[in-house]
Image (cartoon, rainbow, N blue to C red; front, side, top):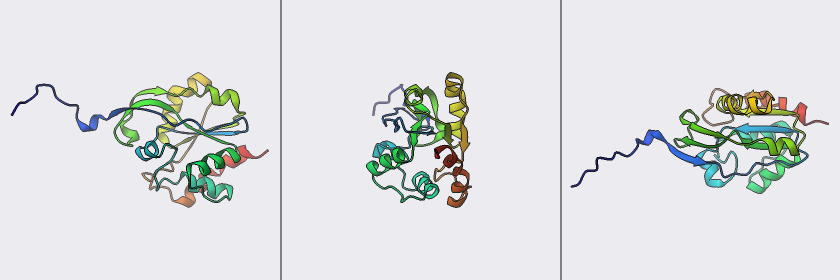
Length: 177
């Protein structure tokens, strides 16, 4: 048996990933919700918050009094009809699976196209990692603070669905005309 002297990186090192999901927004978008980077399930489905246990879609439907969207097209239409823009802070990074804690070597997304097209009244971050990454990479460039909301991830067991809805209701005041 031959043994290589070159070692493979340990599995916990993660893999380089590039964000391939286009942002959702139009000129009528009033708020921007930013995640950190798409989960494995989101990367597989090709759309935001694709993990079936992520409560993002259920929370947005709950606070807007709308039916929960199911398909990618329904989700896209839901966002645009409600004036919600969605994207992620990170364009590329090294990540292990879906673990936000493993994110390294960050390349931030350029938020300028969204901010130049839409009249964004408020920026929200979905969880602490997106908030930390936003403050580090985005806020110094665009000069706008973000409001951190509790993560809708299934990993955030500290918040019930009802508690998430209560916290996320702040979005509604920026959507009203």
